[in-house]
Length: 375
Image (cartoon, rainbow, N blue to C red; front, side, top):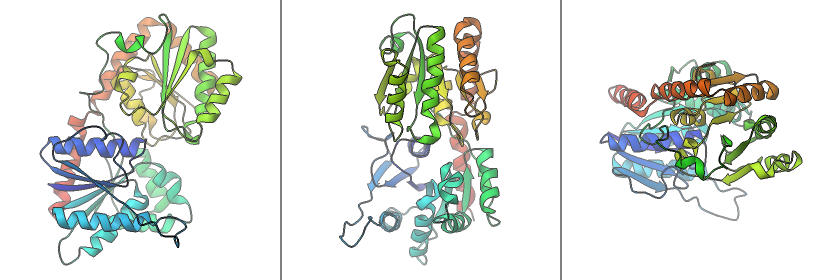
């Protein structure tokens, strides 16, 4: 199949999954064309057979207060589909990608029937898409898509609740992880670069947006640090980075906290951890938690959104209400002090992640593509 993929190139679950899907499809013999305003972070730095990146460059004109990226994207989607003979366009994150794909489809009418598959990832439905400025076009573009998928049952139900979408059948295809890249450590080399000997290593990886509640990460770690020697390693960057830095200084934790900034390839980092912290306000799936579990790292997180579909309470980690920092701290300390339970959870986490392996999930997308192209 000849497949177009459009996603945001920035750090976050939707861009990561879209790019990994493109790479997996290329390995399976499909021709993949990724279209965005910059090369996605999981694509940078390497050649991938049968995967081509196409950059969208919007015109910069003094009349425009903001560059009309969506129009330039629609034109590029149309151009690539026409030139490369694409059979379908798979867009990740509805805003504005589903609408631009629909425009590209209309421009191609009479030449080919470009199928549009839209995958919903989270805030395109739960936050941004419900804003009155975007609600109508989001609902329209979802309903006009030939197929719609969501990354969790939670997000599927939220889509129906928020938008109705009487004309669409939302199918759940979960996020996935490449177990060739994300797997438990074979030795202790990953740990040595992160923390002093004898320290437990706690990890957090995110885009540092308010929904991640990174302040709770710092408070949680402060409680753990009072109970045992530990180091907190944070990877990523975003609007709440300064808040996190301030909280570290306020709680006098600077000696035991490391801010790494943006890390493109996080697998080695995750393999060095003892516990992954994700106290988010809401996660439609929780890809970072899945990647940590695949590396044999138990998770302490909130019950928000789709996380209970990934983290099995009491088996691969612990879940608590949003904002329940004291409860999460107690769970984290108890787990880190109990070597037998921690080892059991490590093994269970890695086993659970296999249920979301690329080998299991990507064929479901291939089946969806074949289904829509057969119409």
